[in-house]
Image (tube, rainbow, N blue to C red; front, side, top):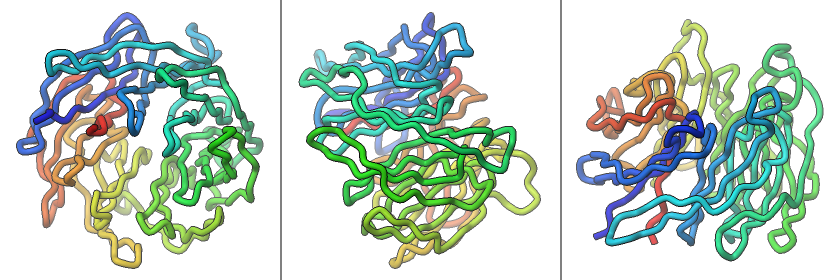
Length: 354
């Protein structure tokens, strides 16, 4: 039986292997390194193609750094004698500074890139061999938010494809969910009505409920979870819950994921070094259950195992990926059962089984 694989991205330099592939034991949670790839600066976010053995990674750089504007790399996951190997295909400019998030359309033809520093989003065609073509559609956001330090301009933080085909960009800098109609044949974007978030919320990442009628947004700056009723490109906020206990000092929200059965929702909290755990009711409403330690320091992105039994957390400051077992009662997530060293770990994603 094929061993499940995870791909880990980090804030590493091009002189060190900043991408790492590892095997995952779904019974015990153990991680076994299998390959690594260097030559990429700050591959802090990765995305896996849904049907082909290809991966994509940002190179999170900007004009203020010596490495220049951002890029996106395409690569291949090759299997030889039962072992998976990473190899690079090509790279293309991301269309802006500090690219921080990638998404792939369900058909596997288009890659969406959110450029945090310049507050824009690009669409790159995926070629028949998995390589990336130069940028196609491109949209630039405008505006400011109430936080003069973090919201001095637009900061596109993620792109999410809605179940009905709309594309939603969470822009932390202007407190907005910017919605676009998307043509999967031409890759063209058409502006739809934007949705204003609460002032100072700082929307970062989002996930849709399987019903397609609800969306959950992790707000980085005010450390809240927003529940939105959704339909035909429109969002209406119907519930707001804090992701950290009252009185907690400084910190930032990072990532958000649903369990495979959509009965639980998890949000990572940097600074508080926790995962906020919520129960999801049949109607999609959430109830806070509590908080569990992330197993390291400064949790960024995390992944839920396909069977929902473990959470794999990329802890940047402690430089590792921790594997937390899912529990049925308090504290809802157990102490790490496994750990894999990865300097400046930023993102972890499961390779789709094929």
